Image (cartoon, rainbow, N blue to C red; front, side, top):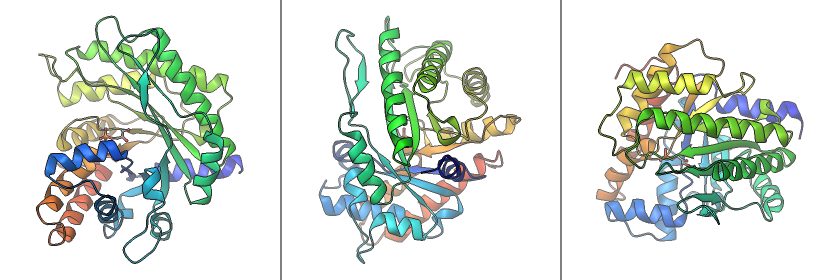
Length: 334
Ligand code: 13P
């Protein structure tokens, strides 16, 4: 796999006015989302739901790629077309979540490290054969009393960098995701400082592991106050803080930054992205890689009538993609 091909894929992922839909919930996580709306967590329901999302008519108007879960990349549409092939045929780059989730970090109470490096090279080779052209690894940084520790930040950055090196060796663009969680009552300044330290450590580790930044995408969390913080921030404050934090930590050569929604409402996730792009004059495209903020309206509709509401649910997916695609250009009208 050439450097040019990795760079080309990375650029296509953040093409102007397009973003990513994250539908890579593990079986345990989708169980929670389904339980929330009363859907039974069977393999067929998971397949049908992913089919609904991926076959949304004209999805590629605003969506460049989708992140799948291991089970999903092995599944097909009801007509028997493998999802990855369906996506490639319809202008959507297949991506795959490859981490194996977070586990308690020994010696660091309240903190976690993401596992999944053992055997990763072989898994990546298989995913490439199945059609994946980018991968995702999510690290989680918790904010709380006396945390995060430097130990947790560095352990997670190191794992992200080793994952990124393996991805590039196997021809997949690594999407590196260090998520600073919104849980807690910390203020926006604390989130800023933690995000800054996390990103500095991440780009240091990527440098140490010889990662080609031109073939890497950052999936970042926005700089926001904790969910339980009494002093919430305005849309503009979040946009300005996030931009300042990214500008001071993320090399300009990176092809793009996409955000996770992290539990923000659909409208907040779109408004924040739009406000950042209205500030403009940025070294990289800023777009989205939303899971919940792309899907929740569709899931709620679908759950009421799995067959009858299929097309209606798809039109909400399209609407959410359009709103976020416009926000990626700073042209969302609200
Ligand atoms: P949310 O947008 O729901 O946070 O999910 C994005 C994601 O892929 C987290 O890893």
